[in-house]
Image 1 (tube, rainbow, N blue to C red):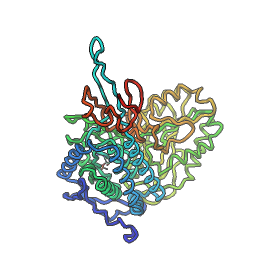
Image 2: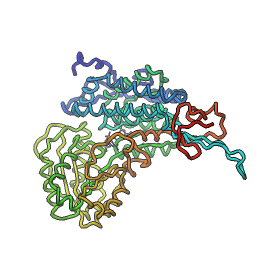
Image 3: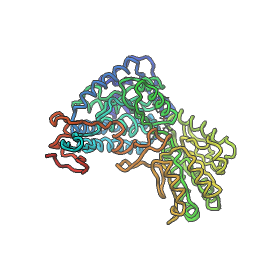
Image 4: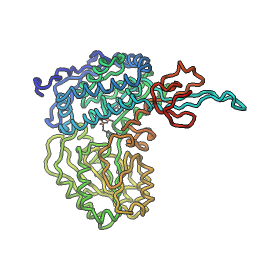
Length: 538
Ligand code: NAP
């Protein structure tokens, strides 16, 4: 990296942010890795010590008391300032992102845009204020046989939140990603357990958050960023009594162990873990017949997009045996081999890809239909497509597991009944896709319904890769896609993970929060005696 060009380059210290102070008391250090160049990056990061973990959580706990008194407008200013500071990191951030992930500049900029959009969306939401879902039932003192009290309810924040980001989204699902933005918007201080594979990107973004906090008068401890390469720091954070919730994006193994830890605490806390998925795609017979060739091309693109490093990667394609499916498999094998292999995020990720692929391929009855053979550069992944009979798939749950990378398995089902059985035996998934011709989905409605029961989002005639950030997006599905399918990790409704409903009974108007006062000083939309309105209470 050219130090002269990038004005923020020297901001990388390798230290932890304990609130607004840089700190490096530990002795355990590590470096990030440039998978394109196949070398370690130069900066050295120091893992947080037990003392630093405690300090960060104590600061967060104190900051929480102050944050509870801060208005939606002030929180919005903070979130918008974070977005501004991230933009100000400019090329330094983009170059750091690429050097730590091997992902191209275009992807870095796209992900930065998404991160900025998320921050500003939460800023708009909390500034407007109606998201607290205020509900008021006014008193009826002379109700018989007993009087009715005045009750007023709204969402209040849970307390300090720990966020674990995923390796494959260093910006949008990491330090200032959706979990952090939504938790800060809700009024919860955030302690990020920085992802070791993009610690430099993490430190830059953390510096932006700390600057924004200073500029907008946020209490010290509203945000901390802790380095670690290994599970110890994360485990301690989840077990800390002052931590009240956890946001996680990553593997099923990681998410599940944090979930178990959190539920074994003296005071169990919620863990909102978004985890792996194989995102089944059902291609119905007419569609296979009419557009098998173009579907093969589309799916070759989707399977290899971002070197298959998306949680929504289509890892499972399901069809009913016949000429249409055979032709599709043949075309898919041709199309996928036309794709140039690309770089994975890290030697560990490619190592896991290769070993998970080998494990799957070695299962009885599995046939490889395309396997990129030519030599590839270090850390580049060879794409692979395999196929198996429906009955074999049903018997062997190893085949139901995610192979994170450019890999997909086509299951050839005997008939409609077997297809439905297979779908209903799948683990919970983030997405499911139905590829159908006109009216064909209606003919296979029981299959569509079976799929709906296993997923959080169902797609018609499209691909699962690509997650739009908007209010109606559901990103999260039945376990193990996520630990709580009632919530989404993407879109403004994700703020609901960090709050609890709270009621005031017969509370004096002057002591109520503005959201619940008679005058409605914030002019928010509220449910008053069963009617949604912005009216005051006379
Ligand atoms: P990962 O290995 O689970 O790591 C995620 C973070 O959790 C890291 O900071 C890691 O720390 C920590 N961690 C993992 N296991 C832990 C444990 N037992 N105790 C404490 N901390 C633990 O996941 P990844 O490699 O970053 O991401 C790839 C996976 O994420 C894929 O399976 C993919 O499908 C999934 N993913 C899901 C979504 C979604 O929205 N559902 C989005 C993107 C990715 P250390 O690295 O320091 O150990």
